[in-house]
Image (cartoon, rainbow, N blue to C red):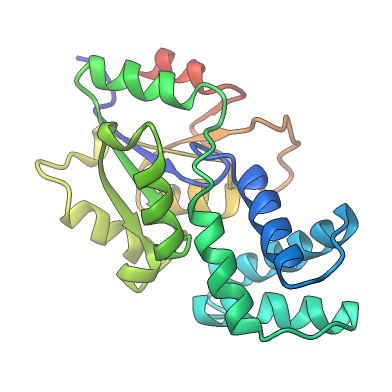
Length: 228
């Protein structure tokens, strides 16, 4: 028997090129607001945003706090003013348009579906962004469902997030599920907490000094064909 039937993919940094979408969305809105853009400003925004999302994984901040605080903190550092709620709303719309795929994402989805596998997306991202981006993407037809933490009320790596996932997948078999993601702390630890096999998508060839041990590690998405 083939080992895995249900493939649970993270969205950002696994199927979707979040860095490209973030850069384009941020620059568009920042310049529309009359500010002078630079790559250094984007870099600083990304650092602030990433730190807040790590805090979200630990349930230290809410997703609503992320939406505004990332811009409150950035604007304070830069000494500029714009309503952070308005900026976030415009940014989220632009981010949702950024349906750029990671290399090999469409091809692996096609391969999995052609072999009668089921594809699901598991994400901590903002609902409005994730729904829009999937809708714009060329892989939407392959995805059976998308599970968004903002709607569920729990986020990866909380095992309760995965309990919701299990309850909403027909004929679920945990021993035939594989979690695939780029985040050791959210995706891999989350899968471990839920008793699932995991695959770390280490496309950056980063060192793993976290103490979190995935079942598998890949550098390119097409390597998943070996795990089908």
